[in-house]
Image 1 (tube, helix red, strand yellow):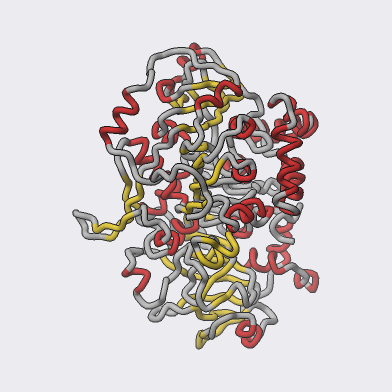
Image 2 (spheres, helix red, strand yellow; image 1 turned 90 degrees about the vertical axis):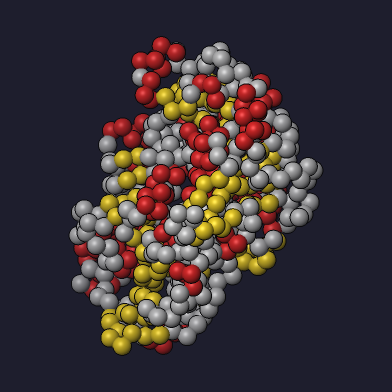
Length: 256
Length: 329
């Protein structure tokens, strides 16, 4: 049993976010930990989880050891139900066929807005990042789960640039901007699991990861956190979860 | 804006319908042979053109055509692609392109942020115009449909939307809901790589389709590169497999391994050792490393075959074996 306690932060993140998925859901997954976690969930306890990729794939069954380097490569289509155009697969979000969007993030704020575009002045950025990809579409059009490494510089009060919208400035601002559906559902970090307050839409800790204290989460966060009254403690990764995960990514592309 | 170059024509405003139709009516749409060499095909692209690029990330990238345009010394291109990978690095570093229109631009998620992209955008040498992935698709779709815009429900509320004054919010005349109108994108020329096509340009592609069918219909000109040219009889035996009709196509180039070092579905996977060598070299020094790569792999070889030779038979075969394995699953 002790063996199971030895794991990397990325492994913990993958396993805990896999637990957030439910059998039968249709999930739109980004590359990296989301792809891995969705596949893990599918192999463990969600056999009828349908995974979509922005390359245009419905119902992927990723093979262990053959993880795709992006969600636009041929490996994503392995044993899928359907391959369609990338605009078409994104339009499934707009039509409403997708239960959950599942992404990684580089920087998130108290309202769940994500930045993957730039730091500094948009006209002449200090740091130009890769950009939204399908992130803005997914976050605009469905419920979101975000898996993130927990660092103070990543959990900030306000993101420099809203690439993928969470609850914008809180309250009803998301709805008022025309985004009448979706929103942040869960954030999973290597320290805790979060949801968002129903009213003010600020991030709230609902469960601490095994061995993590409230202070540790707050100290590593750039804004004042709320804690749920019935704050839970997440169970550690099981031997079976770790074993399956390591089989999926034997080259440790995403879990090292 | 910055030192981004010569003619600052508005590259985003959609053309009027009369103009769009007039431009199309001038094209020779007859069933005729269009096979040219890779070098000859570069004549279909003029400096300053807007260029739509097919495929996505490391998939079905028309890399050989891009390589040839850089060697031909093209300048000030505005390049639009759903997702841009190392193709964008090469286009910026060679100064062939000073404007990238896309939703995501880095070499690949495995390697973090492209230092080449960062260098060119952060110093103002080039502009990165960011749209959401779906918006890119709907812009090509509108272009393909002959309408000036498409309404979408994403990009609202975000800074991605705020940075794009070219997109206009409106209230739906039927439901009064807020929508974002994204302008049609009708590139001057599209570069698309396919697994097979005939000499007329009837093109079939397998697997991931990306936005290529819309892109072909939207563009004023299409240059196809293809793994192989097949007979028109073969096309006619399975016309339902044809995804791009010949009358949209202006040039056909037979170019085996035309996406190298990226992948071509069912034919070869990305050549990861070469990609890793490349990323390592250019991210260590986005100026000198990139110049070294361009000199050795773009300007150096006498032909595309010689470039493939530099990647090496072993890696090509390995990529081909992995590529074909998609049909074993």
